[in-house]
Structures are given as C-alpha cells and as structure tokens.
Length: 286
Image (cartoon, rainbow, N blue to C red; front, top):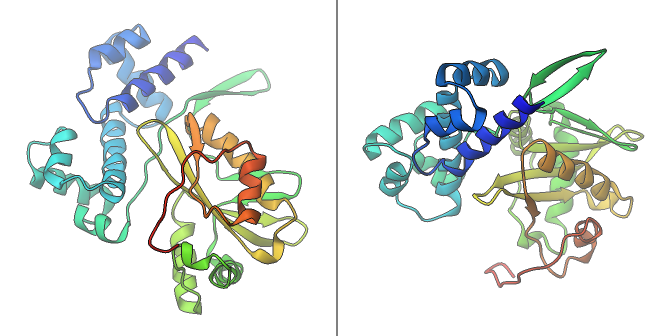
C-alpha cells in the first residue's frame, strides 16, 4: 500500500510540472528507489513508460491550452519543453492526428487521462491497475460509454435541448439523422462523454461531458437531459456517481459547471450536490 501511495505522489508531482521541467531524481526521491527501479515500477503498474506518459499528458494539456486560452503556439511549445514550434507541431500531430491549428479552430483532440493507481482485492490476492472505468451502475441507471446505436436517444436529447427555453445559451447540436449519427459515433470513441441509461426504460435520457481538468485539478462538467425526463432525479443520481469517479479516479480536487442562472430546473441537481454559485457574468448569447 505504501508503494502505491508513493507512486500516486510521483504522478501528482508529474501533473504539477507538466508545464516545466520534470526532475527524474525527484521522482526517485518520492518513491524511495533508484531510477531503473522507478521506471520499471511505473511501466509495470501503468502499462506505459513514464517518459511516454509525460509526453501524452503534455499533449492533452496542450489541447486544453489551445481551446481555452489565447496562448501562442510558439509560447506553448516553449512551455512544454520543445525546441521549436515545428517540433511541437510534429509531436502534436503524431498524438492527436491533427495540427494544433485545427484543435484551436474546431476543438477536436485526443484526451489522455491522468493515471490513478489503486489496489483491488480478489479472494486474498491483489492487483494494481489504472484501467479507466467504462460503466457505472446505480439503483436506477447504467452510466456508460455511448454506442453508435444510441443515436435515436441522442437525437431526442438534441431536439429537446434545441426546443428548450435556454437552448440558445448552449452549443448547437445537430438534429438531423446523419448529423446526430456522426455525433454519436464521435461520442462513442471519446472517453469523456457518458450516456445515462435508465434501466427500467432501456433508454439514454442524459448526456454528460467531462469537459476538462484544469491546472488546479478542477474538473468541469456539462450535462444535457431530455426534458421529458426532468423531475425523476436521473441527473442527480448520474452526476453524484460521476462526481465520485472524478474525485476518486481522476484525482479532481474540485468540480465546476457553467450554467444559465435562470435555468432553475437544470441547476437543481447541481445545487442538491452541494455546488454553489461563485461567479456570474454576461455572455453574448444571453
């Protein structure tokens, strides 16, 4: 257990220094072992060399910076330790499959989550692992990854959102068959999108998006529910389970959401979970 705790502390050190130089001697000090031993422990536990893990996490951070800040690519490249914008762009394209300019324009990117190491006990034996959770079951819900055949349920959610009183305050989703099928295929291949299926109905009624984790380990969450199913506590039950996942599995220290202040029905489950309004601002859509 002590070794697991030290490995998690080494991961926390990496996360804190993704925008600066990572001292491998400090990683060894945290884990109280030599560099070869640390590298072996990390690879065996996480299934990936520590150098590759750092590179992947930096590419994920780079995508967030491109989307949510106005940082210049040359400055971002320097921050992440690349000698030139060209070298950074090559590495970025290799990881994400697209250049940085495309991510900045349309918000597309590949996410690589922070590792979280745990011990799981099985009949007196234990194993360590970091495999992402792909399904969470509660009393009434199955919270899972999207499947391509969820597109009709997703279309209902999209149409409901478009017809909502506050639809103009949210991103515009496609509602046509081809557009929503494409969106559903995309969601099914990305880890941060969750489908909330009601067991009794065998129907997806809510979409939840883990938008990003910022440099302060604050997880931003967004959700859209089919308004036909408001008032059944489905949002609250799903968000409660996923909040636990964010804290326990992703290492989030806090959770935030941006919402229309007047949208009381959709604010209700967030407030029930203990979230408080800490800032208000005007946007062009309001």
